[in-house]
Structure formats: C-alpha cells, structure tokens
Amino acid sequence: MKFVVYEVREDEEKTLRRLEQEHGLELVLTAEMLSPETAALAEGAQGVSTLGHSVINREVLEKLAEMGIYAYSARCIGVNHIDLNAARELGIKVANASYSPCGVADYTVMLMLMLLRKYKPALWRQQVNDYSLGGLMGRQLRGMTVGVIGTGRIGLTVMQDLSGFGCKLLCSDVHENPEAAKLGQYVGLDTLYRQSDIITLHTPLLDSTWHMINEWTIAKMKPDVLLINCARGELMDIAAVTRAVEDQKIGGVAMDVFENENEIYHHDRRTDILKNREMAYLRQFPNVIMTQHMAFYTAEAVDSMVKCGIESLIAFHNGENYPTCVTG
Ligand code: NAD
Image (tube, rainbow, N blue to C red):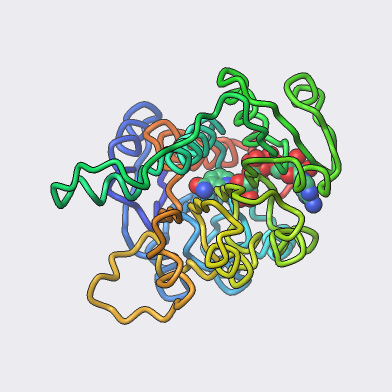
C-alpha cells in the first residue's frame, strides 16, 4: 500500500516512519499542500493525507478520484476545509483525527493559574533582574467559583481536573452531561456569568456561540472576572473584551486562540508587517496572556493524530470502516 502524506511537519516524521514499518507501507512524505497542482504527486498511491491547511474542494477530490484514490484523511480535528458532500458523491472515504482532551484541559488549568498568580508580569521582571513583589499579589483557586461553558470532551475534563483544587463548579451546555452534573451544578448562562470568578469557554464555533462573550454578557459578569478561551477566537467579541480590560472590569484574559488567527498562528512572522491590530494591542496588557493555538500540541496528541491519519487510510483501503470516518 502506498500513501502520500502532504503537509508533513517535522514532529510527525518519527511516528509516520514507525507506522510505515509496522504496517509494511510505502509512505511518501512531503511538506507540500495538496492542491490541484500537487495532486499528481499521488499518482499510483491508494490514499492521501493532509493537515488542515490544504483546501480539499471538489476539484482536488475529482483529481483524486481520476487517479483511483478513494481514501483521504485529515490529521486534524476540523473538517471545515473539506467538501464532504463532493467526497460522498465521488465515493471518497474521509476520516479526521481524534486525540485525548487531557492536553487542552491541562493547558486551560495552567492559564487559570498563570492569571491568578500574575505569572506574565513576574516572568517579564525576571528578565530584567527586577525581583520586586509589588503588583504581583495573586489569588488562590480554592474557594473560587469557576464557570465552564460547554461540558463536552474538554469542558468535562477541565471540571474533573478542577475538582481536585477545591473550587465551586458551575456549568452550562445545551445538552447536560451526567458526568459533569456529578462534579458541578448546571445553571443558565446568565447565572453562570453573574456568579463565576473565572469563566472558561469550551464550546464549538456555531451561529449560537459566535461572539457569545460581548458587551452585554460582560456587563453581567463579576468585577475582576478572569476569562479563559482555549476553544475558538470567534467566541469573543474582541473589541468588547478589550474595552473591559481597559476599564478594569475584567481582571485578566487568557486566550490560546484569536479571531483571524489564520496566517499568523503556527507561522514565524517576525519580519512581516502584521495587520491584526486587536491582537497587537491586547497583547501588551500585563493581565492578558495570548498563545499561538497550542493547547492541543503535546507528543501524545500528535502521535494520536498521525495514527488516525494512517490507520484510517489502511482501513478504507481494506474496505473497512474507521471510528473517525466522517463520510459515513
Ligand atoms: P465537544 O463537541 O466535545 O464539546 C462541545 C460542547 O459544547 C458540547 O457538549 C456542546 O453541546 C456544547 N455546546 C454547543 N453549543 C453550545 C452553546 N450554545 N452553549 C453551551 N454549550 C454549547 O468539543 P471539545 O472537543 O470539548 O472542544 C471544545 C472546543 O475546544 C472547540 O471549540 C474546539 O474547536 C476547541 N479546541 C481547541 C484546541 C486548542 O488547541 N486550543 C484543541 C482542541 C479543541
């Protein structure tokens, strides 16, 4: 079996080579994106895989089908870049990847603690031999009320992690999760906004969640509230968040994601002129932590994504199903 693996990152190579040996495959690895122009690289292969940057539109899928390739995998969770209807029409099986929610949950708790202990300005001071304590007094997590919005895979794991810290947990979701109900109290969003000291977002981006953190919802929150967003940048109206940081209504914000982060996050843009003003302005506050969409990025998660990417192609080639198949 020969598969062409596009968009290969250096950190994926070891696992790819291991799987190649284990399953007796021929893997062609390339850093190129899959596009109508590069599809020819897959001539003679039985399957192709990409990360989430290649646009897998009808044209690309038709090229694959013309070459007799009916197995495609995305080594990421998102499938917005794939024309799934076209894939179904052409009879191409598509799989995405899955990985444990623990890494993102760890990261979420880390951001909460970093905000609570004013770790960002403390780190800045260390760099210039300033060992003073002024302005660095923190707060402890025990006894705080944490509101978790979205109690799916990651939200639930955050609640499980936090239950060891002695916090009061509130949560809100359109579907109640019995496991989460054992750890915290389901309340309406209004109550969660009004009562939480820390609010953490774990919903997908939907019409109903777009800009859910906005001027009106912030107005309901407690003074000094801490906001954590390890989900999707678009859940926050960043202009409203920025105003609330300026007005000191919000005590701190930690964001691993940002609206319009594409083309910026995961790239080295040091010598480029960036036009995301909101990002540049918000970043300078001592109580705002921003990271480059890396909460998922652990050795365990990368290993799992690569495994799904290759094992799904093997299953499809053998006429079998795969748990992360998204074309049915
Ligand atoms: P999930 O599908 O398991 O859970 C999402 C939950 O949100 C579900 O329980 C759903 O019912 C709930 N929900 C949907 N609409 C809602 C609403 N209007 N109000 C309240 N709850 C609502 O998803 P997950 O795997 O836990 O991922 C959660 C988020 O984390 C997603 O936005 C995902 O894109 C993001 N994510 C980020 C990273 C990262 O590296 N920062 C990594 C993985 C996932």
